[in-house]
Length: 373
Figure (cartoon, rainbow, N blue to C red):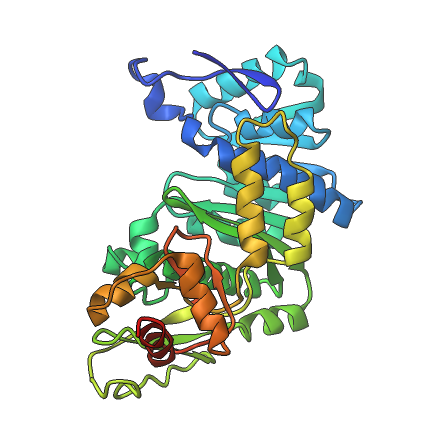
């Protein structure tokens, strides 16, 4: 079927086309992801003017590569599937971009072994980790990563999460953020093996995937600094108290300091540092044109990320109130009550009732009960 996205025209497999969808995949629900990719590439080009080459590592229908080429990048589209390669070529030709991009029918790990790129974009089906080492070994400036295997990342598929990410994920009430921080931890450790430091400059969890953009600093000292952002979380299953500790050696709580319970989950190593650069996110927002179909949603997401408090976990107001047997009031009023009690608080981009605060769970309950009197 024929679609138009971001100003380019594409032929993509329809869900009814027998066989082709098995080797070539186009997900219209990822248009927000792709729109934000183009906005991020534009903002990053202002940040790093020498960045010119872009590798669309799993090109499929070629949509990311075509859009990047239309935006002025020196694009390489890579895929192992013959159908994908043929379709990517056709879509480049359809948009008069065949001279501005090349298509490689190869394993992307092998391609990265032979060539370096300024920007490498990993958007595989499932975990990106089989491709991370090659990306960090050969990318100069920016690695873009999508992970769609959210069940392993979030701890719902526990053993799979351990195997894929060499970390212990836990299925908590902040399971989405658990996935974000498990992914960032694994990527930081992968990069560090090549003496590369990573800085997450734009990260979001949307619609059952995690997307992150990692600026690279190819120095051993930068890799050491990135690893310093890793640590562990202790989480009380009874009262939902949680506590983060930096370091690569876990020192979990034996009992909960809030309720005294001993049902403590430990997760990690996790990325505990910031996962966005607020100034860069604001720059990305400015690069979202009205012509993008997801413009309103993309800008709203950027606004939410800039406003979001930098804390390693989020809370869900409804889950807390249900746990306490208390009614949940309007979110704006709830956050205002926390601020009135002297705590920093903000909405989180993970959902309508999620929020971040520097208050612990006991202080959140105290502020809630005080304003229900």
